[in-house]
Image 1 (cartoon, rainbow, N blue to C red):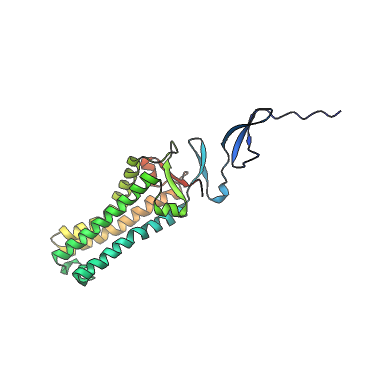
Image 2: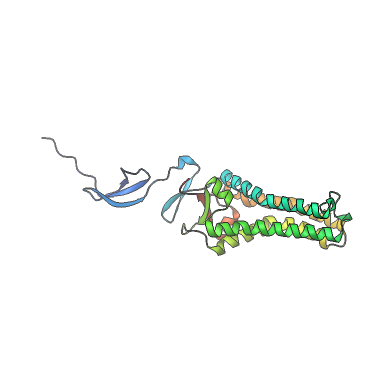
Length: 236
């Protein structure tokens, strides 16, 4: 007489009706209790546990493409404004010969355009991430920023602090370029000092965003500052 195989002991097992989750076996039958199962990491990079749930970390190149899309979105209005201003004030509104021959009116126009551009680059990610967890570029590539500790959406405070950090470190120095040219009594000297700051800003930008290449959780420096992490959206 053959013996009946013993039933498995109670525990969590891969859900026979859904391979992306675990289901609780009570020793006799399957129950209605489920839990997130192993994430399919074959889609991209590594994963980490956030608030008890495995999430796939956004890789460097996904984040980079999201930034490129956002940069195009933000640059288009600025280019449009420059065209309009150029048409209204003439070609001298944005001359190629440097600031030494510009009128005060043209300098003011350029300073205002630069200021509006800086505000847009600063406020855009803060508002979108604080309200929707992702910018338009991030949505296009299927990633979002969340709180590393809780797995919840970033608070508006975290989103604005994140944007402030990037603005001051990455965008702030290039804007000094314009300020130096406008307020300095010697435009040529100010021009030289402004150009010196441009490669410094570019180097800092590279450091801020490339930090994710060697960080174990793919965090950039702004993520470290506010405790955020960028992951693939669950529907990706």
